[in-house]
Amino acid sequence: MSNKQVCAFLGDDASPEVMQPTIDIIEDMQLGIDFHYPAVGADAKSTTGSLFPEQSKQAIDAADATFFGSTSGNSTAALFYLRWGKQTFANVRPSQWLPGYASPMANPENIDFVIVRENLEDLYLGLEGDLEDLAALNYYSRHARANLADLGPGKYAIKTITERGSERVIRHSFELARQRGQKRKVTVTCKYNMLSTADGLFLDTAKKVAEDYPDIDFEHFIVDDFLCRMIAHPEDLDVVVTPNLYGDILSDGAAGMIGGLGLAASGCYGTDYAYFESAHGTAPDIAGQNIINPTATMLSAAMMLDYLDMQEAALRLRQALGSVYSEGRILPRDQGGTASTTEFCAAVRALL
Ligand code: ATP
Image (cartoon, rainbow, N blue to C red; front, side, top):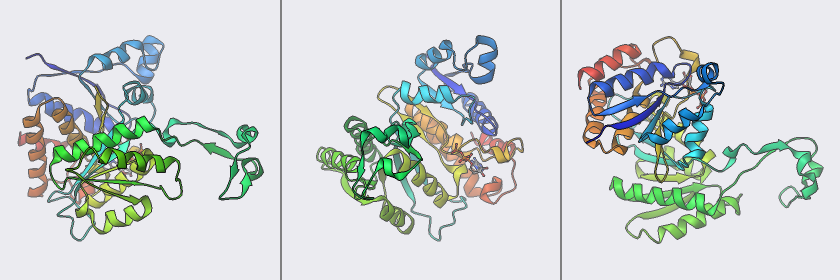
């Protein structure tokens, strides 16, 4: 069998401190994965004149998947290509509590759900500008009972929800609920009362898709009500699907419920490509201190191994992480321990 090809971007600030040891661990497992490190950002600019040269794009195209370290700017062009270029529309963010995780919840034992965040639309197209540029459109707000032009100087940002974009991420969520085989439930959440046209379309699309999955329960809640329910009864949830911005916010909240961003894995899936990146950012405030928690990155790597059809290796990696936490001797700082990033990675490595 030929080796799998993976592009890796180590990322900025504290990201390389978790990306490199995770790659080292996977290399140690000898799974038949070749890692490639395409040039990007300032380094690429100095050698090729471009922040994201054509060869790097081709390397992403040629790979089976990409393992991406969070960026604060250096590899943003690569990230945008991974999203919109590769059409990775479903950002899957699991939150499962494991013994040893420092959850602030009284009873975190049954927290095991996934937020699927639409990854390409909503407010994240970056369509922003001056309100006065829209004045000619004569928009009338029936809520404010005023014309846009009457609001005075300011800015706008456009939120888009499309039929195609909604359908594919919702379908992905129903398939995921089947595959997980747990509570077999999909929960849709957005603000379909206030945004009855845009979020209303997301909900209506979900209702239609649900008809194709009679074996999966379907429910929907307005996003503010949902957040209250998520905190009060997380054990009721299985797969939650939501437009981009709500998903971004809710998934950080879900991570907080199991013990914080250091535990928050994520994978972004399209029809024929996927990339994997922790849900947290570059943690610039702790960069260079060797204290960043690598768990989110390792769990994202496990999602990547699943995607590469290496389920047994993914399970081994998850089990090694789970054992280090349940033993509780070597825990990262954000989980109440005193271990450095290096010590924690060594403990996981020792169990593989
Ligand atoms: P982004 O907007 O890209 O999500 P951000 O600036 O909002 O990034 P993060 O980089 O995710 O935020 O960091 C938020 C806080 O969480 C910071 O205090 C950071 O140190 C902490 N944090 C994030 N990831 C980890 C981690 N893996 N281990 C420990 N602390 C972390």
